[in-house]
Amino acid sequence: MGENILLVGELDGERLSSSSEDLVGFANSISKDLGFTGIIFALPTDGSLGRETEGKIAESISKASRNKVELVFMENPAFEHPHPLLLTDALEAFVLEKHPEIISFPHSTLYCQIAASLSTRLAAPVVTGVEAFTCKNAQPVFERCLMNGRWKALVSPAASPWVLTLNCGAFAAPNEQNSQVNVIRQKFLKTNDRYAHLGMEQSTVQDSSLEKAEVIVSAGRGMLAGPQWLDLIREVIGILKNAALGASRPLCDAQMLPYSCQIGETGRQVAPRLYLALGISGAPQHLAGMRGAQCVIAVNSDPDAPIFNRADYAVVANAAEFLPLLVKKYHETMSEGDN
Image (cartoon, rainbow, N blue to C red; front, side, top):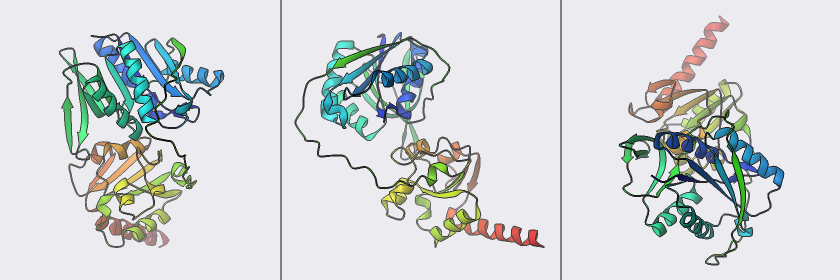
């Protein structure tokens, strides 16, 4: 068994993204079970990070890691913007130098592309969307979802290195460690001109109601067939205090609601006191966006829907039929209270 695990993170502004912090939690678990002794955390940057910012990043990793970490800032001006081809080149050279046993990325659009390219170049097995693992005969068995969470696949790579992408929220790291972090700044000067970066455009949506809401009523694919479902949901939101409307990606893809309502790995990250999931199956990508919810009530006609594994209260019913009953019961209760 090799000694090193390579974690490849990304920045959210001047701090680690939450999914990158989860990489450390994964390294804590698998190093304990399989005896890895070295953790390398590679962070691509354009070289403009100040020493104070680098120190804060190193400190956050130190608090989360149970192992000594080598934090490598991979510097190239082109890394100011996402550049999958150039970053794959950089990581390929880095892997051939360090010989890690495991190479782990956050499960994002950018890093899924890089993981696939890197596995091809290294002739290494790749497992995407890992959300758990066990060890059998000193070998890891990785778990990932199929068919929007209806099936679980167990995969044990036959050869190393193993290239993985980890689902957001799957491996929470503690915040009570104090490991040693050695900072290295490594310039990567190679260029790759196979495509040109034309620009970045920030979303015009500045609404923060979802992040601030205490209650979120979220609609999924199961609501598409329901009559007047959107009016009913808005009526429920009007009944509740400090409530907001959310959605899963299929509903936004169908243009029933704007993408500003999308909750999930590629949407908004929320942490309400109450999350009411209506007709949502519970795909890992959606669960990643609502992982901070304190209480989850799920309504779905499929008793085997994966959302029920996350729910505190499960209602097996057609959500489009359940909502009118909920609204009716509320009005009856209010009328009784007036009397």
